[in-house]
Length: 562
Ligand code: AMP
Image 1 (cartoon, helix red, strand yellow):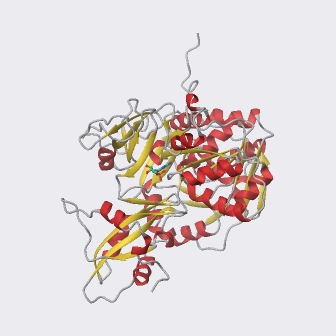
Image 2 (cartoon, helix red, strand yellow; image 1 turned 90 degrees about the horizontal axis):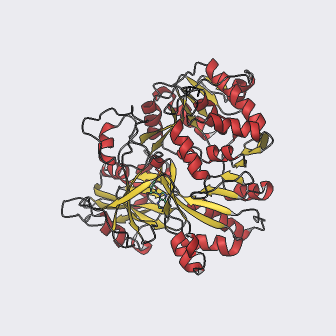
């Protein structure tokens, strides 16, 4: 028998690329772009990925470098998803919706070497922050040409056109870092999570199996979840591996664009946060559109509303796969589908099951732990924090040893490596921060969140950042920000504020004050002026009481009101 070579069995992205380009060269990749709808084949994609790698190599990108991306879902971004990891570099996707301070922190913390940036708003952010970036050597604008700017930039298409498609992939190891994404669902600054080749390989295969999502070559898949969110839930990897046609909605993924892509391209499977699918339903109510090709929508990132699931099923014959996951679990970690023996249950009972966060995906293990560290029974009532582990669950945060101790179980106190152990073999439990119940059939349901953050339309808002800024206002004595339910965005921030006696400040004034620091979508929709913020026995803001008290919108001030 031959001695195994170092790479023979390695779980890297190379066979993904090989399979798509060699076995399905004729399959299409379609993108909506500012310049119109773009389409090419997997064969073209393969050539361009190699040319991009050669171009990145020519501008000095080497093994271990970080290639940051700052853009929406389109074919160029897909090319970067493959070129960077296959050449031994690390793809670091940065969220274009974040405020400037977070973008600056993330790019500097990761020490990105090169940034591939969408034209328009994303480029303008980079332009504003250029003097504050510490490590970025090159900016490549993902376009045919470059904007008029003082930032030294080059055009993506020049980089690709200037290099032929002969680039040979170096050997990469499965434990090499291939991806990186920051999580903002945290009370401190965003935390980096790194993905090795092996993790991406394992997770993409998990997504492909019918036990999770199930993707077939005959599917036409439109990932709406942004490519800057946990590798677009791994769809660009899983779908390419499957050899399926893929459709990307580009820089303005509004309901009209999505519906027209479904109609024109025959999309069968799509994925995104609930807000997107609520908007699409509203659009379909008012327009005559044919979405009959659509079979399934994967909805996650926030709880899928039952009424929305029901409407898609009853009115459009589209089934919703409700999925749960985190940046730290490489996105999808559970999906809710009835088990085979539930097939003859009536529709409502099945919907009750399917609107839970569901069954853990194959490859993972979980336990649910109460405040005393005891595991709670699976009775559908007892709740505790969900812990998960497995080969697709992060083992640590990049550069944040103190967060490792807090957010993972069994981290030895001496482990202050802060970023060197992505490939360690025995899996640690990740403390998800999600408070859940598990029913007798093993279905997880998220009932609360341990952390003080708000998720609005799939994007995080830090209540603590808002509170710190509000308290800096000269008329504010106390400020607590809580999440209140919202039909379209699932959650929106409500600021509960105690003002100084005799102060003359209103809700609009406070929102104006916050605009200086935060993007518009962070601003509290409502402000409640209270005499005192209720406190717990330990003197902390009692946010549970506030959430309950102000669930009724009548009790809050809303913009536009006197
Ligand atoms: P992120 O790291 O930004 O992907 O956010 C992960 C968090 O989003 C989870 O810990 C949950 O709090 C929340 N989340 C994700 N999917 C769901 C879902 N299907 N239902 C409820 N919450 C979810």
